[in-house]
Length: 214
Ligand SMILES: [Zn+2]
Image 1 (cartoon, rainbow, N blue to C red):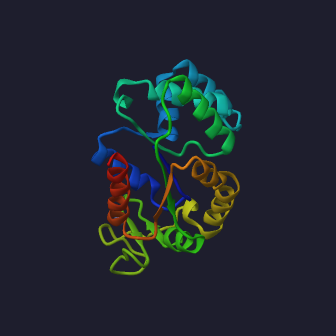
Image 2: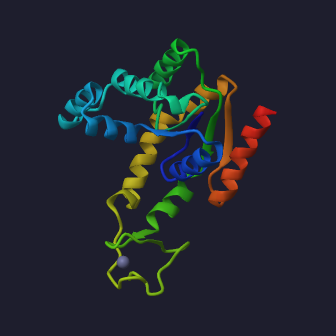
């Protein structure tokens, strides 16, 4: 199964929850890139040559890295993809690769949230150098701008700045949201509301899966 959704809609958290509940691995392309690069596999070396040159890793290389990962034993009973495919060409290549392996995408969950909700959620995040995170609305520190635990001044990550969030949402709408139509036409896409509390969204997705298994 695949998780889709804009940055900041909670895909990573949902993936972790679902992976634990369903006992299937959570495959994030970011993670498998990092592990291939760290282990110095031929694919990792190849991917790194693009990254070091400041280029995007070509789809064929990404698909090959995914193919290698999903053939591992732990994927026998299924797996959960997060962060891939990101574009229509990737989705087509992924479908062809799965066909070759006698597998297919069974379910695509689209975690939807309006841009305004995402901007509000992400631009309210505050971090501390001690590792604690806060949110001006959902999890405010006792004193504004100061870490409860260590007294340091809180800061905003570059990734959470409103202009960065808006830029990432623009890329998402251009490249990734066409995937919603692609999978919907195949009849395997289900929408869930990403603005609800995390645990409610997890329950909603688990219910969809239970219904599907019928
Ligand atoms: Zn702190």
